[in-house]
Length: 162
Image (cartoon, rainbow, N blue to C red):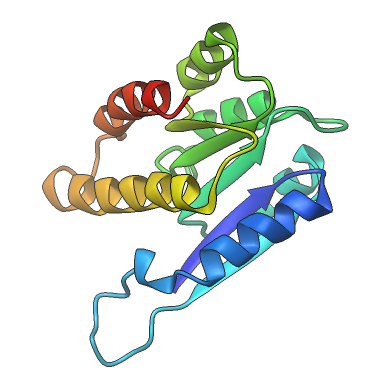
């Protein structure tokens, strides 16, 4: 089972992301053909809520907005990358702030992918699939290294999605 933390202050966007991911469980292979692939989407309405949830469970992916009350998405990305427990968890930023400067800042802080709002279900699923597969391949090859290669390819892939 894959567990994804969606951090977004808009309940409509959280519902959209949840539906997109729960309707595509094949993005998250379990490794066994006997058990059905499942996705658990955990929602947080703010960065503060995310900081409360992160220590309680392992997450395979974090998807976060930038503009939120209290702790913003960039601060959350910084926390995740500085945390020994969570630093290898892939992070996707979803935001209406999509200038080159905003993208560069999010990727420089450690986000693996930047997706500008509004985005399609397909573009979200592609980003998720790339990061989940890249993480599995990176762990199989070098389990102790943080995933630097996906960030570099994500930066170029997010440029083409504009």
